[in-house]
Amino acid sequence: MFNGDTLRDAMISAANNLTNNRKQIDELNVFPVPDGDTGTNMSMTLANSARELEKLSGATAGQVAKVNSSALLRGARGNSGVITSLLFRGFSKGIGNSEFMTAENISAAFSLGVEAAYKAVMKPTEGTILTVARIASEHAKAAFESGSDELGVFEAAIEGAKEALEQTPELLPALKKAGVVDAGGKGFIVILEGMMSVFKDGVIIKSNTVEEESGEEETSRNAAGEYETEITFTYCTEFIVNRDKEKNKEPSELRAYLETIGDCVVVVDDDEIIKVHVHTDHPGNAIENALTFGQLVHLKIENMRDQHERAKHDAESAKKKPAKNADRTETFTPVTPTKPVGFVSVCAGEGVANLFKDLGVDTIVSGGQTMNPSTDDILKAVESTPAETVYVLPNNKNIIMAAEQTIPLSTRKVIVIHTRTIPQGISAMLAFDPDTDCETNAIEMQKSTERIATGQITFAARDSDYDGHQIKKGELLALNGGKVAFTETELDKCVLKLLKQMIKRDSQFITVIYGEDVTDEQAEEIESQIQQKYGSKAEITLINGGQPIYYYILSVE
Image (tube, rainbow, N blue to C red):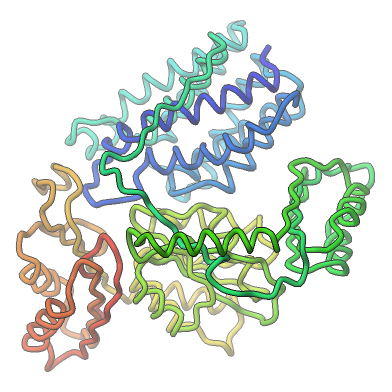
C-alpha cells in the first residue's frame, strides 16, 4: 500500500518528469501554427499542483489526492491541461478518504478519472489522451481482478497506456500522416512514469530545466508597485477550510461575517472545502470564525502595506529593463459586485485589449496562442469584475475548457461564450443587449459568432505535412476559419489571397487587425490595396492590434 507521503512524492516526480520532457511532447503537435503546446500546458498544470503538494506532510492518500485535484483544476491550462485535471479529479474520487492507495482504489481511481474526462468533452475524439487513459484504466481493472497488488495494477495501467499510444496514429489520420503519436497521450504516460519512479523505486525524478538558450530574461509588469493606492486593510488572509459536515454550517454564514471585518471577500466552496480570501485588520478573528466550520489548512497571512513598499522597489528596478513584449502579467483584486453584468475577455496586444475595453469589457486576461491562461487566471479576472453575472470570452479554442472550469468555482454567475477567435469575441460584444436577460443574451452572442468569417496569417512553427499541405518551417500560414488554407512567402499577397477566399457576394464589412511585427506603413499599404479591390462593396476598417504571433487577423461580415 502507498501512503499519502508516497503519493505526494509521486505527483511531484510526475511534474518534474513532465517538465523534463515538455519540449519533446510539444514537438509531437501536428498542427504547424505556433500554439500553447500540449507539453507546455500539461507541464504548467502539474507544476501548480507540485507547489501545493510540497507543503504537505503526514497527510493521508485521500487528503493528498484532494489537494492535488484542486490545485490541478485551478492551474489547468489549455485543453490538455484541463483534461489532465479532470482525470485526476476522478482519481481523487477513487481514492476517496482512504489512508492508503490500494490495488482496489487505484483501479477505481483510473476508472472514475476516465469517466470524468469523457463527460467533460462534448465530442470525445479517439486517438487522443482520452483513449490512452481509457485503455490504461481497462488494464488496471483487469490486473486488479486477476489479483495483482497496487504496484502491479499501476504497472498494468502504464503498459495499457503505452499500447494505446502506439495505436493513436491508426485512429487519427493526421497523426499517421505526420508519423507521430498523440502528444496528450504521451504526456499522460510521462506523468504515470514519473509516479512509478516513486512507487517502485522510491526515487523522485528531479527537474533538469535550464534557462532558455537565448539567455533573455523575461520581465513582467509589477502593477502593484507602479501605482499608488490606498490600502484600507492591512492583512491579506487566505486559507482553506476542510468542512466539518457534522457542524452543518453554510459557507454563506462565513462570508457574511468576513464582510463585517474586511473587504475583497471571496468564499468559494464545494462539498469538501471552503476556500477563503479576505483583506482585514483582524486576521485572528477571521480564523477563529472559520474554525467553527472545520479545520484550516494552507493558511497564509501577508502584510499588504509591506508588500506594496517592496513592490514599489521592484517596479522601479523593473523600469530599467525593457519588457520582452507588450503583454505583461496582470494583478487582479477580488471586488464586491456593484452591477448586474460584466465581461472578461482573453486577448493579447494592447490595441486589441483597448478595442475590447471600448466595447465594454471590464477585465482583460493576457493570453492567446502560446500563452494559454490557467483556470485560476481566468477565475481571478472574474472575481475582480464588479458584476453579479460575468460573461467570459476565451477567443481561442484552446482556452474554452479552462474558462468553463471557473463556473463551479466562482462566486459570480459565469457564462462562457464559445468564441474561438478575436473577431468572434468582438462580434459577441456587439451583439450584447443590456435590455435583454442573461440567457437570451448568451444565445444571441453565440449566434453572432457564426456570422463572422475569420482569417489569420501567422508563420509555420515546424515542418509539417498537414491536411494536404506541405509546410516548411518559417513560411507564412494563411488560416481560414482556423484551418490551413495555403502557405505563402509574401505578406501582402497572402492577405489579398486570403481575403479573396473569405469574401462573399453579401459581405459588407472587412476588418484588418495588424500585429506587433507589422509596421504602420506596411498596414496602410495593404489597406490601400484592399480599398482598391473591395472598397466599392464593403466598409474597410484598419486597427493596430499589436498582437503577437499573428501578422494579421481578418474579419469579414
